[in-house]
Image (cartoon, rainbow, N blue to C red; front, top):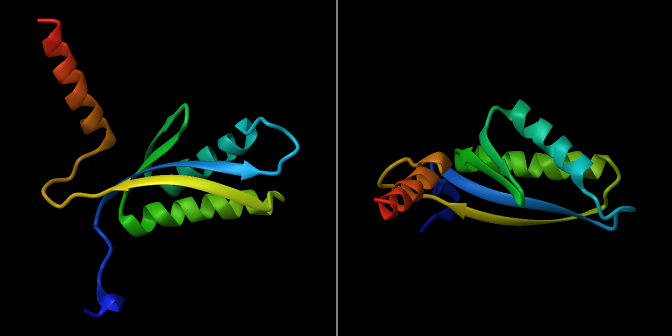
Length: 113
């Protein structure tokens, strides 16, 4: 198999959390706000939550934005960043983060009937 021509998935959901290491403060809210501004400008669909952000889009673009977030924080003087990433892709249908949450809410609503 020639892996140099193997494409990446067309669509993915990636949940990520950047963790700046060695900063002067335990607070990272300013860095989170900067990353959110970058994501907003990227045009990639996203949902911020209390422990990270979920991005939706092509595999390459989603991972590019995460890399750009690293570069943004490195340019601020943060020399080390650890990132946790969970990525999902599927080929049977395109599913958004909102679709996934709505499906679970639908099932939970049936419990109340």
